Amino acid sequence: SKAKKTEQRYNFDLIHQSFFRNLRFRYPELTSTDLKFCALLRLNFNTKDIAKFTNLTVRGVEGARYRLRKKLGIKNNQSLTDFLIEIK
View 1: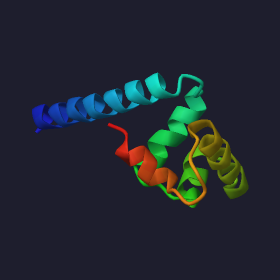
View 2 (view 1 turned 45 degrees about the horizontal axis):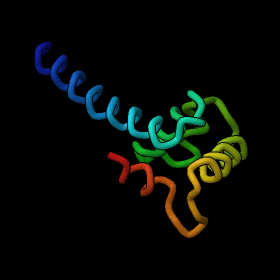
View 3 (view 1 turned 90 degrees about the horizontal axis):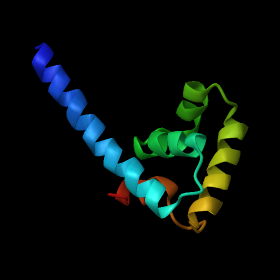
């Protein structure tokens, strides 16, 4: 029903709002593009899916992931996606 869809959308927005709020608080230097990549990674999109979604090349997405790792201070042996999923 329409009411149920509205409620689901509201709940989704609440969940992601706290994610973005916490991410911005911890890492204020992140750009809006960085935040978009974080959201896609948190949703478990792989590099090819992100490339299609953002109209970038796979190489461009790999570069963005590398820059994001540096900004977030994530080591090479740590999963970027797992790191973002753990942010509450």
